[in-house]
Amino acid sequence: MSTAPRTEGRTEAGETPLVEVVDLKKHFPIKAGVIFDREIGRVRAVDGVSFSIRRGETLGLVGESGCGKSTLSRTIMRLLDPTAGKILFEGREIQDLRGRELTALRREMQIIFQDPYASLNPRKRVSQIVGEPLALHKVARGAELRKRVDELLELVGLSAKDANRFPHEFSGGQRQRIGIARALALRPKLIIADEPVSALDVSIQAQIINLLEDLQDEFNLTYLFVAHDLGVVRHIADRIAVMYLGKIVELGPSEEVCSRPVHPYTETLLSAVPIPDPRANANRKRQVLEGDVPSPANPPEACRFHTRCPYATEICSEVEPQLEEHRPRQEAACHHPLNVGAGKRTEGETTFESGAR
Image 1 (cartoon, rainbow, N blue to C red):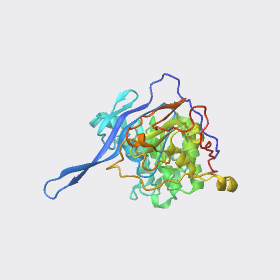
Image 2 (cartoon, rainbow, N blue to C red; image 1 turned 90 degrees about the horizontal axis):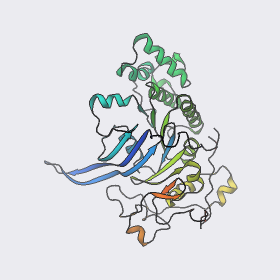
Image 3 (cartoon, helix red, strand yellow; image 1 turned 180 degrees about the horizontal axis):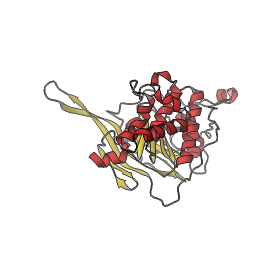
Image 4 (cartoon, rainbow, N blue to C red; image 1 turned 30 degrees about the horizontal axis):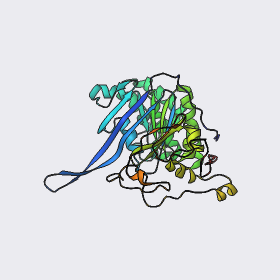
């Protein structure tokens, strides 16, 4: 897999985004009581997130475990109902869709789940798993459905002969290919990939990433690619959104975010990615965060990162920073942005190379 970053600009300027999220929130109530449940608090899994995804683009969504990435993905897919905010798909609000309208929307967006071992029904054959979306939406049946299933399996690098086998007969990488075939069955416009390679070996990760890129080029797919591995995200994404404790703290072009981060949290994530050069890796300065991620049920006031940030000052605990542009096309929510002004960091520019995969 090449380590060259993706280039931005698949969509013409001024075109309506395929997906637009506006101040999206998803809170889970915390209840207590034996006879009568009463709400005593809320887990703010997603708390005021806004971004857009252009047609044919790949937006990478990164952050620590528990920061709200998967909840955000499932809320956009309408697998979870949002608490507040708007979700627009091709300019149409979809957060309140129900019944047939929501079913019709499912044809336009699909999801690839993280765990290929748990996302496939062990009692069904591959032909049933891949063909189920086609049958449910009455796209094909009988011989035509079987033909479409065979084509999908071959498209993702499997054989038509595999259609009669069960999931337990496949390796992890092969199972994920089956999941990708299922997601492609209805020819969606948007695919949300929720950490699709995190459970796979590094060599298998490369195969799946290359497959996703090939499919995107062939079918003009749009991806929301969720991961915590910045090396993978840098390779496949046109832009990267960095998420911390339910909020997006930085958003910008992949190459810029990875080489010249604006938010201290992004800098910390990059410093944890190993460089495939022992000498450079040994001499590189690392940012080590103190403490654990605060609870999303009781996040810190103002800037949520200030309790762990090495650059925090008094204003960080008093005023919440807004996501705003600090460098061309690069936004961050920070009172003390890095790599701005004359274009040089006071602490030394971050260098990052994604490892061979």
